[in-house]
Length: 226
Image (spheres, rainbow, N blue to C red):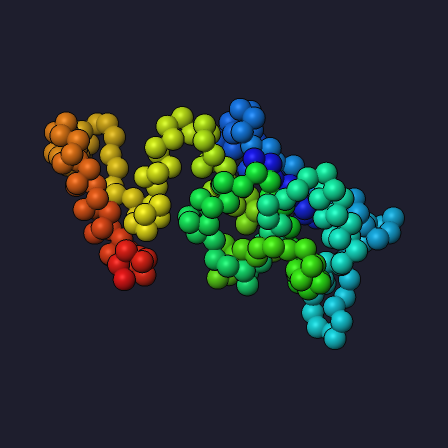
């Protein structure tokens, strides 16, 4: 999978992709992430990419021209399955969406900043708008990092045990069950006997039951509980 990211602050995206699972995915050649500084397509020698909004009001708006040039130049070299704008008023990101996007070959992410981007970019180029939650951040860089991480870990071969992703929370609209590791007894806090039984059928039944209980208690809004 190839992911391009357009941003005015590429520095914010340096660390997330240089460590842990995302680094492993890139080292294996399973994922390529390229971050592009929007100011490369600025309207003048001062690096201008934003301007005051028509009609007045606080906050600057990212201009049409730099974004158009960036999108068209990148699109000339690669056909994108989706051009995604990270925005608070987009569709809320979830595991189902991550699963779907992980099947794509090429994505372009646009990180908004300031007051947002000129609406004409959304109308003429953006194919999907995504929000990571009902709150506002300083820009789309952190949401972009979250998107890449959630998608990248699902790519075949990225995780050492691919079944791990299948048992994550939200894969079946359930939260994951409790997990334990050594020692069996720590300060008198003991691992449930069923997990030590060796009976895999009963263990899976216990885990499913615990997932149901945890989901009902913590996320009754999920479809499994409706």
